[in-house]
Length: 383
Image 1: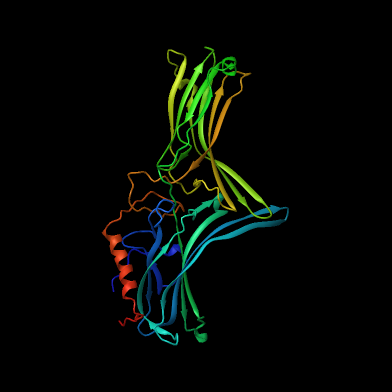
Image 2 (image 1 turned 60 degrees about the horizontal axis):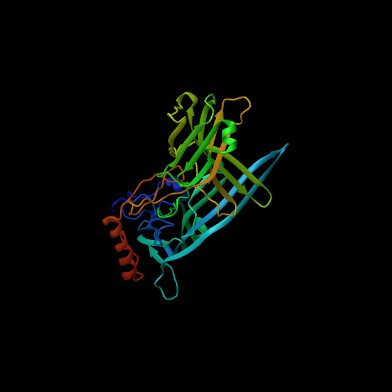
């Protein structure tokens, strides 16, 4: 029998078995098909495989798959010599799909040796993406559970149910046709700007951005006093995490990225102005501290972002200029990416690996349809 190569690594299984396992659809390396949040036909698809020896088949009456997602928070705080653990959990989705039932009229057990069952599970469009924040203290996770109702064996300590659990990632997207909500800070020629000696007109072109869409800032500074000094200008994106239980709320924050312009790099034109554009691109993922997409519609986990601009003024009696604006970090589906897409890597978020709607995906869909159309409850295959 041909060895399957498009299977999840063993490390992704929460509960595994050499005899019952999943494989990805077609030649993909993930289960998600189509863009959740944009395409109403987004789904989880794959194949469940059973491989039992000819001499010891499993006696089963029913096989189900459960697609389950949950939002979890958990952290521990020290109080003197004692420690207190705060936790909360909410099930986001719990869908059951019956894959196979015995053909015996009395519901009796059937022998199964080799069996491959393709499956498709439609995804509710309001599901959040998989995330992990604050060092794993807040998580949104999804898993596939294969449940086999079998004949128990007390002598071998086998119960009446055999289960396999596999962790999977979901990624969510938004359409590029949405408004990107530009924003402007303007204090260029008013009394306060003239009195201070510096005016500004700063435009954030987009309050929504993502891994494939940088945040663009147009910066115009006007020097009303020739001796006004700027030591540096910093630009940054800061993430704010909030975990909530009934008893306690935990908050944390960190800078995703920071950029700066040094004072000596600031060049004035003939009108005593500085006119420049800053592009803030989100960094590559790293294992130490990953940023997260904006999440603001959950009960226990909230992730928000701000863009922060600070102009450091050199005068002793001059306050620094601080500007900030709430922004959203999203997976924006660019118009030229009209094919299927999903990402599944070790950083728990996404890595922008595309896959197209090619013949391999079509072959998988045909297999699924053929399986359903020709299903006659005869699943026993002898070696």
